[in-house]
Length: 232
Image 1 (cartoon, rainbow, N blue to C red):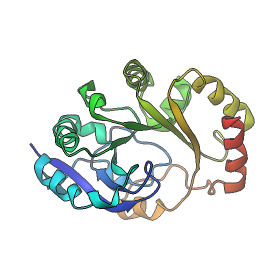
Image 2: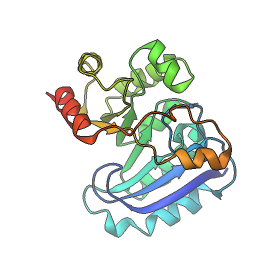
Image 3: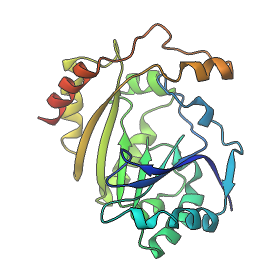
């Protein structure tokens, strides 16, 4: 069994609590209109590791983790490689390493993976069926199933959503988001991420049409104000 990895960041500071090794995995079923990593969509061979090889690499950074740090699996969408993740996480748990899963909740083939995860950073694309389909190209059902499994297992959560000008950068949407998320238990943190255009050049290089070509980056101060509404 091997896993396909896009890149490994040794000292991540924003992808979960503490200092973390961030594993950006290849493959994603979503085609989000604001995605800035289109090179990670296909599960091609960039680097590949067996679970033991990857854990041995992660263990090198264990002295830096302290009390709060650990490893975060991100992407792409890490759940596209669920079986590889399960085997890797089993080994990480034997080493006493904290595990965070940064996911959009799509692509899971075995919910056993949730038994090994300490924290889930859940990316909310949109809260309505129509909005979700427009942004991702997929139906909302699989996300809802994943969230139900997370709640059933009483997992700790960080919630995140990208805010895009002209789509969800308004108080009306944020109030609906607030209503939607207030019933989700164990939410430790809620963040709004401002849309940016740093990935546009990647689309040109890959000859992929960019669907938000005429949309400016989200104003960070406005995003912060909307985040306050969500959190209050």
